[in-house]
Length: 450
Ligand SMILES: [Zn+2]
Image 1 (spheres, rainbow, N blue to C red):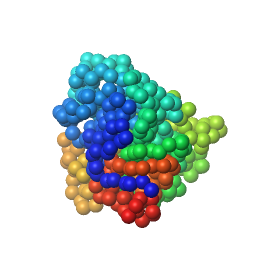
Image 2 (cartoon, helix red, strand yellow; image 1 turned 135 degrees about the vertical axis):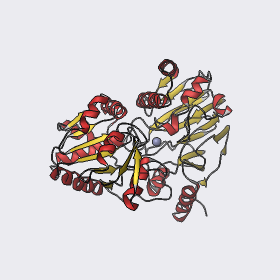
Image 3 (cartoon, rainbow, N blue to C red; image 1 turned 120 degrees about the vertical axis):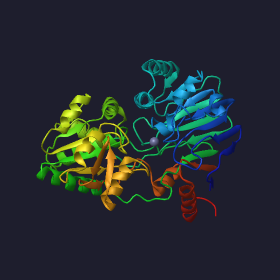
Image 4 (spheres, rainbow, N blue to C red; image 1 turned 45 degrees about the vertical axis):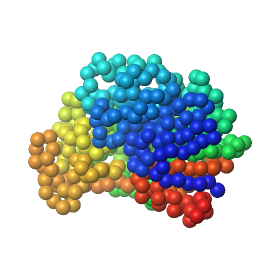
């Protein structure tokens, strides 16, 4: 039975240690050092959400690393990479090919948002390309000079996401990265097949939803979407969906195309009005080798869930503006996911005062964001200031629950249970309360000692 430890920064290994430099008792800012086999490996280089990546101090331990391993392309795992390279750090960066592509898109976007000059962005992307070494899943590779191997395993969270297994003569460590829910659309599930020829000294695992059980099934999600879309179709009205570009947008398209395919909703025009969402969707489409069986079967039957007949893309800003004056039923998917910027703002300026429009939230809205404010005003009344205008909220405000990209506590425990001979587990990437709840949950089920 493994020992499970919450909110702890340093974990000893037979020939080194794991040291969490971020996400010790919060969900953002993932960054850890794994010192084994004579080398110092940095796993992820995240930024704490809401902070300016340029102004945040990068820990010295990050700059000392001999190599960087990236689990996936979400900013809370990669956002400090520009700063690391900017400091002159020039060692190899390992990740999957899809993670590399998503990193480029999201870091270019975040540098643009921080008003970084184009010249610097180009220089960063070039430097990143020089240092990156892409790896396929389940293929052991070596870090130069290290006595041991690293292997990326599918994590089922977003395209290219991985758990990382690090093996030396004396230590075996598994870093979970973010773990996606089993049976999620498009992607294969997280890896559940591990060698059992030796002990696993340390598993570091995320606990974003360590306190939660996801209640919503695919059918719940489809029923809610079906109701909202059919209702808008009848009224010839718009549905505005603020969506995160990476993962959420593609999953949403998957559900919409599935409903059209089942003839549960009409072929309503779906506008993908998010430049970053479009780039990421194109990356997904190029990576069909990573899709799950169900999605590949659908494609084989002529139904590509990310490229259906009524889907159209809006590339230029002026076309987005034109869309605002287009009449008729339509779904508009635009960033940003919490309405803190991006093309969704223009659509909201038109849509919020209009009782016919539906605004559909598909993800958690953090306190202090425009998205949360819209939800609050819809409940309590009042107005909202957007793009210099004071707007009433008369639109129908809806929330689609169940699209989480993280495992719940039972799924986390099942994932952990798939790893044989685990000696110690360190929890991270979860609020302290979530970690404590997960620990208690594991004890109740006899997975950890009382
Ligand atoms: Zn993530």
